[in-house]
Length: 449
Image 1: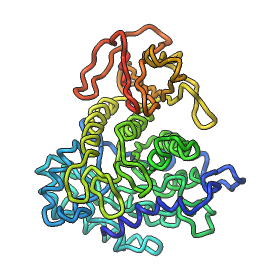
Image 2 (image 1 turned 180 degrees about the horizontal axis):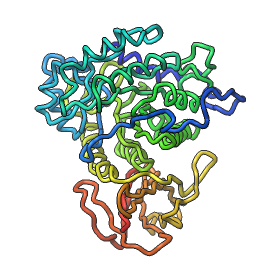
Image 3 (image 1 turned 90 degrees about the horizontal axis):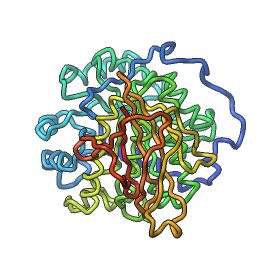
């Protein structure tokens, strides 16, 4: 199973072998292969519902990807807990007691699809497989899901639909975990054996929802690393485009969505992670309304380096950064569980980035400190606007898109209201100070009453 997970996850790296033309979806006109009028109701979707006190932040690997923790998995789960992850993905059933002792609610690996041919599976076969693998855990409140597969092509959608249906049937309320490709996987055409096996990323997402009827959407995108902290504009645009497109499709169908980002040097030529890079990936996901966040990887197996746990299975400098970002993501994620995302926009819009504020703000007031204003140019922020699912409270998150400089920020509200600023470590809120700073790559959450 480990080899299946590793090889599947590493397919994302194949973008290096293809030209930039593969990254553009507007190179031609493609047929519409999904029902543009479909809705959550017409599809009978049943979105994942997690408790308000759980915001999934998880490492996209296993303790068995670490040579030392292979013989001591309990220690591996302790390391994950020390790094302030809220979920350990993915847990072998025999290791469940160790994961529970570390304080986790879990996604089990036991049902990974390595034993099922997803291109030639029958409903009876999948039903029997799922029924067997959930029999001992379907009523366990500390298990909320089962890993199914990673980065499937569209030809596997019929079998995955059977898996989702079987999990709903035999383990009601549990998640059938499936993770999708990013847009830079190959999209040669639906009749060609490409990675996504669709003409476009939009088709890949739309058909996934309509054919598989999932409980959520999860995808991975490592372009913040691959773009060297967004300095390569073409690759940076891919990160933003995927973030906004997955959000759009998820919102269209009323589904939660999770983002998986990079916590080490996946490519040998990549620079090591830094605090701004890690924070920006988390805070942009939160600001866009993501309901969960995965990190590839926690351990550093083989060719991947500078992970939170190094190749000697010791805590690395990345561990300290990862723990800090995890702590803040979990705290802010639990608060945002009470809200729904209503708008995402950017103070410096482009063809890729929308610039129109939603219904809460006229704009934002942002600046560098006085001493560097003339040298630093104009700061740039991402803005996420939210409304409470119940009640009238609103929220706004600003993300500093500068990797090197802190900024000063405040809100320009359309209507006068009481504003508080959330401490991302404690979750408490205070009245805005005369100057509210946002560190490089970090965000600031405002509550509006």
